[in-house]
Length: 269
Image 1 (cartoon, helix red, strand yellow):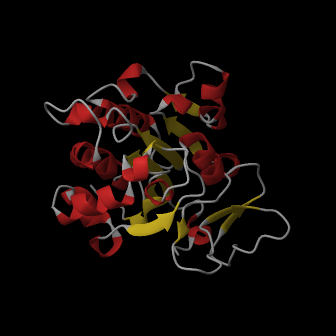
Image 2 (spheres, rainbow, N blue to C red):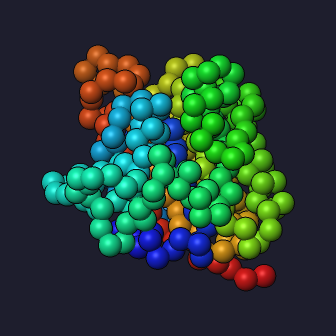
């Protein structure tokens, strides 16, 4: 586990959720060389296989923002990078960044970080009271149809907007940037010519598209500071396994998600 506590105030923080991405899809895409940019970033060039704390977007992100990121698969009490102070916690360690706050977004803000949400799926769309809950945690939040699940350029649009945010901030202003990438969510068949239904193949192609759009954002962040980076899925989804379709169900393809944490090093110039 990274020493998140030691990085407070010196590192920016980037938290990206690849919404609905299955672990097996992430692994296949990596093995087939379809995600070369992510392969270069991931520790040892691999995704870590973890369990999500929930099986749909809203519940998973409520857990994430409370400091409960996806849990390592092997049995044990696994220390967490972030936590909120409460009695009886058994998964905080010396390296854990513990906040006296109701959520980690407020925790970073209390330490001078500018908090930004670039929304993706419907729980971030700010079009109704429910869609305001998660983005409402942030000092600045954005959503439009061009960032959502039906736009075939959604990740490009999300990255362009994130770049605008990054470029207008003073370099010394620490940043907590959250992106909910929508392209993996249904209908991801829009990334496969001729496809009319979603499948593991169409999600693989959607992930390849996402990979191709990420470099400008990561490179811009590296020109500001070292970046504590968390990449993960919030849940998977079923494409007919055992007769199941979708998520919000207790199936291994839904609970098992890819995860990575690493430092994106500052690059001068």
